[in-house]
Image (cartoon, rainbow, N blue to C red; front, side, top):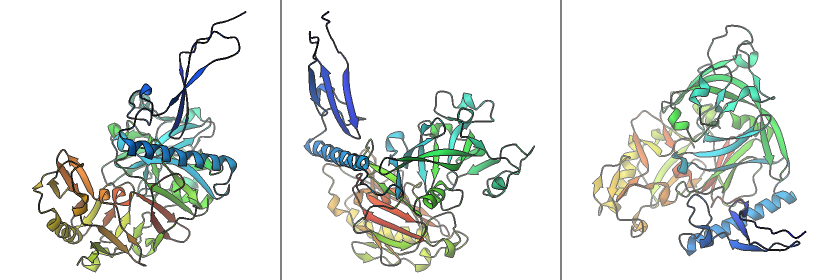
Length: 468
């Protein structure tokens, strides 16, 4: 019997940023269907600002999307064939800017639990507790999490609460672990505070995290995390599910994963202002050979900052001229004064007053044609629209490190649009004695490698494509 076939849906096959859309025409046939091929940039798809479907803004953006898609697909093909690294060399998590979610940080997608569910976590190299919005022992937290994603501990067969009487609980961070232990099997509780005022509370647990090797193979690994059922800033975490801690501490996700996969981890900080659906990875293990990689030593033992990533700066130069900044500014003490830490959880670079004032003074002659004005940072000025703003007048900054390494960030790493007609220098002035903090905007457009086994930090310029 002959039947009429009418397909009215669009079939979309998406691999990373690539998309092929097939539209079906009604065909009165028993054996065939005619499908119309529609290019991903076709006007027929309309404008989709949150995706790469539909016409790009211009020819440059069109080519950029196509090249990026090709590189992503090539990486996927290599991974399927098992030619991107050895199976035990590295594992990968999707990693990108969180600007579209209203955050100055970057985030990863993490699969955990049995059955596994995917969670979105902000990446923070300055903390040690990985935690998620979670329900376990709390009675009313479901109301707080209502309409938002959270980890339901009792629905995962691999969830293991850590008892307060256990040796594991006793080895947790003493500053945040609570002494409360009403009975031996009660959970091990924490109350964890951040420098920006965020406070989270809950209980520690062990859970299986799904790691994906670069050749496509997967492995589950038990990790220690926090089941957060108390949060003093719920609005901040409406779109994300928690924090992935990459601090240098035995409790840290980074330390445990790096120990399992080659003693190092790396990530590439794409341009924070350009939102991409997936352009980079947080990688644990051996990275492919990267040209122009420079290294400097980690100073944890010398500074006693055992959970952070302190590095020794030797100076800052502007257009090749070293600024006259007192050397003691770069010497970190065990009380947290001076020195510099690398922190992906901080957005804008913080400089103590002795360094900040010299940097601003070096910028002012080049910016004298613009009037200073108020903004969200310490030095802002009136500026013409981006299409006519002459970026070539902006001085070039370089951060110099012990051992000869030199970071030369792009201009958009330290000149930001604050509001219409206003730009700001991306540095925050802090009083002495405080420490200097390199924020993620100054780190962007670079691949960063944290070699925990050899106590080094490396970086190299990168477009943050999947093949770096």
